[in-house]
View (cartoon, rainbow, N blue to C red):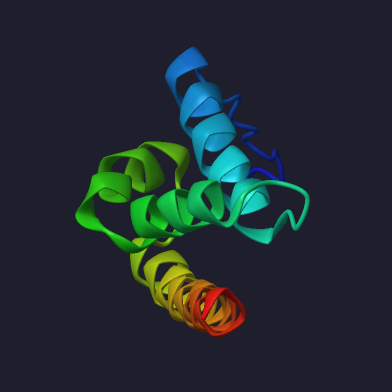
Length: 91
């Protein structure tokens, strides 16, 4: 039996898929960008739209989508608090 290790190099498509997923994760967690953009990124990661990208990148879809749903709920709650606060100050 051989002790050789097979190293797989990612293809161009895999690199692109990883870049898409990483950018969306960074967008979700970047407090310097708008809440709307952060919500869009979280919605993408939590939805079926990210499934193909995750599979191509070799990322476990269920784990990523579960964490993204938690982030999305948190962002929506934050946005709701801000909206309520704005309404109180306007009135």
